[in-house]
Length: 295
Image 1 (cartoon, rainbow, N blue to C red):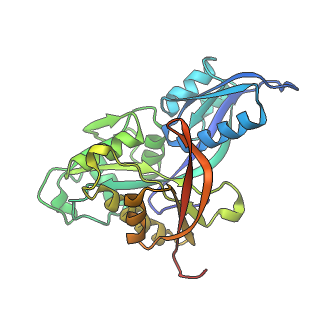
Image 2: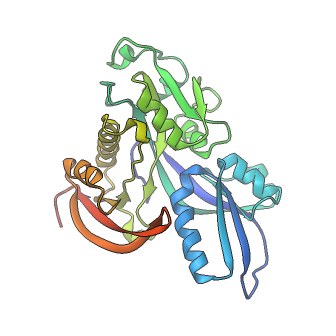
Image 3: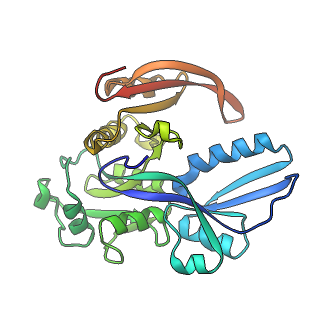
């Protein structure tokens, strides 16, 4: 997917040292790095283990910088990053393979009336030039800047595209995208950024995106889910490259189904026993939203 939303793009890649290929694969494959790649690497790992019965595939969500360092030091087999490798990292013998392009969304609390910010305004907010929400049409309140920790690929992508590298004045630097979403949902004056995933890697699906929203149990039924879905869909429509958005929901989750239907998603089928969590297989319900109304 060339562009998921208008605000930003980050590269999701895997980094590894050159290794020989054995005829019969067995043992453990250890991956380490980007928290944004959880869904992608999870699917790839399951597929790899299915094709190689003697292999155990593990994932350690430590952040892009840590993943690159881990593979460079030989502490894992594959490093995961939501940014491209730097020249000095390539010079050390690491090789990067891009597996997807990931959108980065700006998020605010559901109680915040601000719904539209330009890239220039976002940059001014994160560098401290704009410090009060009233300066961008919001309430008279200090802006609380939430972001990812140093070494995060999502942070690197955000700062690169907004041209704010080493200039951001974060109030809090968190270690995962989920933590950013949860923190912003708790504070009406906070602002943060989160990444999205593409639907499929093949070019045929380049105009389709997959929507995934995860809300901390303590903050469900408080409007956070609606605010996030609404903001993401608004940006997706604005980017002009998307025809449809797909969302996959564990069958029987009536709250999530009603939330998606509120935004115009239509049920389009059930797949049986394709999801595995909490020790058992689950059916999944597929929902679709087509922007131009054409089937």
